[in-house]
Image 1 (cartoon, rainbow, N blue to C red):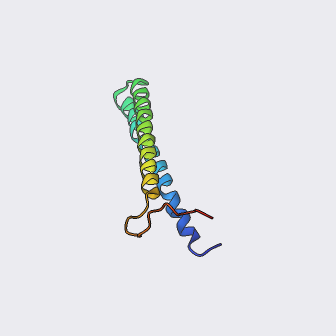
Image 2: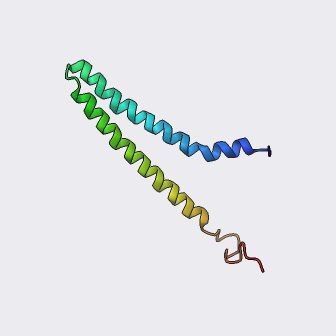
Image 3: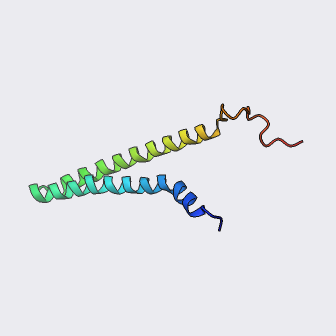
Length: 95
């Protein structure tokens, strides 16, 4: 294994690990909050259902935002660096 490959793997996996934590947080906050409110207010199962629906909506928003951020990151990674002095048109050309 090349030196630094573990660090590189963690750098690449970091956003996806963060995505998992955000999803888990949405489920705990909205779903768990709905269950807790149901038990506190004796309204079972209505607030649990509402919490589940809200957590689903939150998860969709989290995934959409993550996807947009990743696409924007890909776009900025593709753009040539204006300070490098190269225009990027000869990169990968053989001939």
